[in-house]
Image 1 (tube, one colour):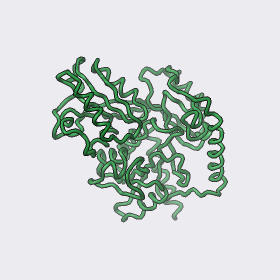
Image 2: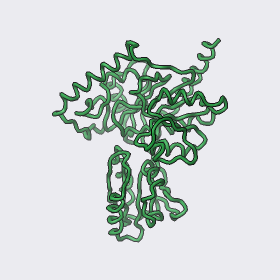
Image 3: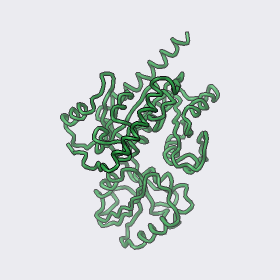
Length: 368
């Protein structure tokens, strides 16, 4: 089993983490005591979040649940739309851009045009607005993206993700570590998913993690790994058809990443070429003129005939809407999509479906 050796803690900042923890503890107690009010709703509201800051894979897991449910229920995804250049409630449509709704909501709306995708930093207002839609349009299930700390909404089901390479019980509160809440607050969730697991994990590895998490009897634990798909052009009209098997070991690849945890992406691409040059930017980075100028200089210096630019799916969502992308890039710019695979997927699917059926049934009984 791989140790969490990538976790870097800043012990000098532990006093600040202590003060931060007091604030978090007080806020949560105010909700627990009923001084601050959490609102429940008449339809299933499933929260996909985490205890830490970014990088656990919320978007592909949200997309997994969308695929699981979209053919049976009207699905809405509600996100705050991180780093969007707008404010308030926005219901995405085919004309929405990543600048208007954020890159992750844009990605989900592009992949699933028939579902509702909305953004609002005020999740309670966002849900109320969605539920005020006409009867034939309003959602039957709402997925809350990254809202575990948004306690003004009480979800019907909570899912917390934890990166296998940075398990929450090895981490510390911000700013010494990356936790938004103390480890004990995992007790609020119904499901924990350990993400980005190594393919060679053994049964004893699963048992060790389960024991260390100290979950309660009602909480379920699942494990997922990343599965990479075939590369796709960011601009399909301009780019030539290309697959991973077409890449030669000697081909230059300019790999551009603006995600929280780029290492797995880099390692995957290095399986196909010996000449991968990673250019790593902060998570949700908005590429400006100086970035493109620097990247274009690097790309021009690459000499192989099969050189290309490869980005993550999330970065592709931003680049599609950027007027700054060099025109000559468009024939060489591709992204590598990912999906997640559950180690015990059937049981997870059944858990989600059963929750929705039970919630809807109980809601009907309560109305009577």
